[in-house]
Image (cartoon, rainbow, N blue to C red; front, side, top):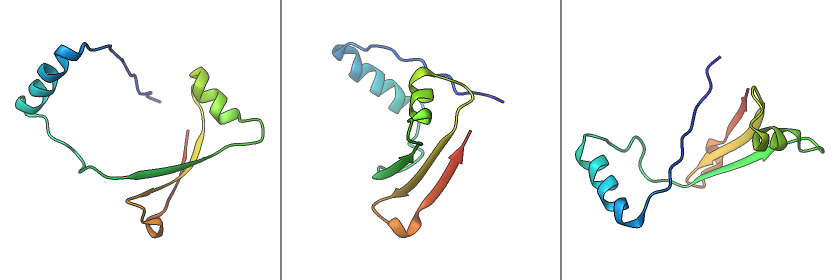
Length: 81
């Protein structure tokens, strides 16, 4: 099972434009147009899934409803481990 790895970096304000310019000019493209995403997460009365997420426990479980652009008729139910 593979897990996503995230690295986060602090960026100085003066470097922000340089980074954005690099991304734009080096062939990067937006995968999705800008859109509103609504997610509703479910948990048990002990908030176990939330706590696992905050603590970085792997593997962990996530249950959510998600829809885009306020179109609730296109509701997605997702259960992920």
